[in-house]
Length: 428
Image (cartoon, rainbow, N blue to C red):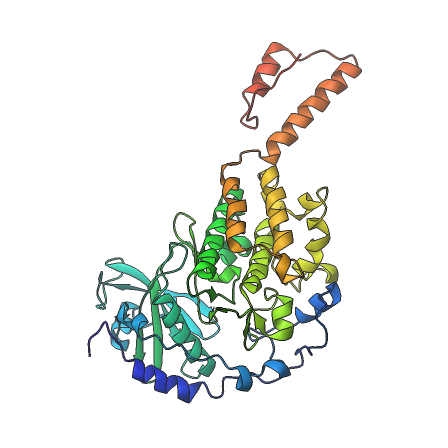
């Protein structure tokens, strides 16, 4: 068999056999479709779901509205087909110290292969790759594995992770991606001691928005359906790339306004109307983007059980602040201190506010989000400069009022030379 071709017949047989039992059963967290009014109470309730598969509503049972398996053989022709032994050698026999992370359906290992080849390479040579293995008993994972190959085998964009190839042997299912050195946005926001700088946050938010805009704007629109910080990977220059297309879904076309599908995703990120009805649109992704934008702004997780009861749900906690210009600065990640753009925070809060609109029609398109974020890269109005300037003015006024001595020439010169000042300061 040609190593660059793959066997679609095997995949089709496999998905028919393994995906019959992939539908989710009703859970205690399933929400009845009784209301389309998405108030704060409803919003809080649906976020109580705690699994990746949020719920399966009676109206959208998989047996009635099952997602058809991908059927594009051309995707496989563009990818390298690895043998299991090749990937085993490339990762050092899948040794534990090569594990990059663990997803819902298996581990991700670091490995090395020869350039434009499936042959394994010695560590530190050739091309570094990330190898995702699927647990043999992950039945639902197989369906997502096929979807991943189908979408990433055909979609190419600077803000989408590159799929290099795949492996399918017996019950082994593996995917081979480009290796991104800085890992996930989740790690940088929540697991590192040093705060992610504001300029990098804006760059990442813009790159991720461009990735979603590309998916939504194609001739055959794609709804990502699982947009979250752990699925945004970063290269050495902090360029954002969307990964994990296992839940991606072909969007509505023609006269259709939505796609009816099983309700899956990650709690805290899924749009309320999608969870309640199973109706999926590109605006479902926009809502998820709004949640991630809030996480970037606040440094808080979408759901955090360790916080006080009124602050566990990020969207519910932040919504009152987003609509008040005087309060939005209370949302900013305190670890940034005053090292953020004033206008940038205002604009990011404004965009997040509209992305999180309860009415999907009121949410912007991702093209509009990209347009709104682009100018924020060039802003240098850091809050620390404004704070220092105001403090200096207050000090001068106080000294004049108290009849104290004026600044000496040397003092004035020292203040002007301070790195905290971005512009000229005039003292009388």
